[in-house]
Amino acid sequence: MKRKYFLLAVLLTSMPLLQQCATRDDINQLHYQIRRLDNKITEMQNNSLDKMQKRQAATTAQVDKLDQDFLQLKSSLEESGHLNRRLIEQTKELDTKLGRMSEEEKARRQAEQERFAREQKEKDLQIAALEAELKNQRQSLQAIEQARLAEMKRKADEAKRRAEEARKAAVAAQQTGPQPVKKIRTSQKKKVFKGSNRPAPSSISKPTPPPPSQQSNSVASGNAQTLYKNGQYRQAYAAFGKIAQSKSGTNEAIEARFMMGESLFALKEYDQAILEYQSIIINSPSSRKAPAAMLRQGTAFQNLNELDTARILFDKILIEYPDSPEAAQAQTKLDKLP
Image (tube, rainbow, N blue to C red):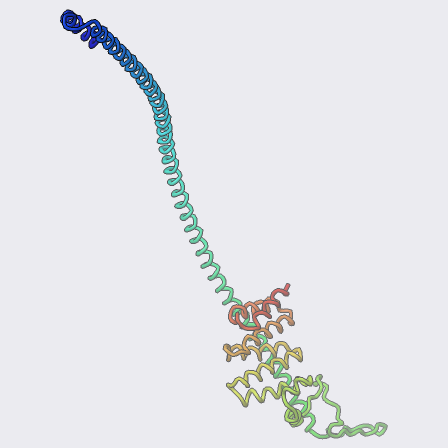
């Protein structure tokens, strides 16, 4: 606008000069140019105004959008801040809970360790007491076993002594010859007893065993194992006894001693068999026949109805010979005991 007014002022001031120097056509031409220039200025102003308005509208829209984005961002920031504060509070609360749980778990573990230590100490004391009691019981059972074995040996020796006395008496009676003739009345006939036709003395109640020479011949006539298999247990016992004496200190002697016990066992002379087995257990505890001898001892006591002693021997096999075949048999017999 200022420029338009400036041009008009210039034209008005120069009009007289132009009228003096220019023609009518020149003036009209000049007016035409002024109008074109004025239209251009007006058009330029309108275009500038429209652009400015458009720019202003665009700027306003951008500002509004920025305001909306700012508000949205502000809302998001506020929400994030709120969530952050909640997260911080929850974290603090969680830390507190974790700390409390850690302390409780630590206290619980410590109490559990103390309880376990107490229980372990009590168990150790109980085990020690049980071991001491077991040791005492073993000693007592061993003493009882030794006493019973000593008593059985005494009885066996006594029976052997009586049998020997009876055998000597029978031999003496056979070797005395005919007895003196007893005087009788005339109405009675005279009877004379000669040699073996004489009745045996009334004091001898058992059958007279064959003379020692006959026994030796019987033993010599057959093998000890054959005698045992044929059921001739008494002769087998004597034959195995000779082997045990001649092979003393060898495995063959131990086998023979065991078969001596088996022969007596077959004759149901359990007391004597127990003593034969005991000689193997005492003199050869590391031999392979030792657990078998102990097992047969327990069976002999079982047959004698000495169940407590049998149970002791079966338990002893499990303790002293756990890897032997007899251990399984001993366990089976223990399971069947009442």
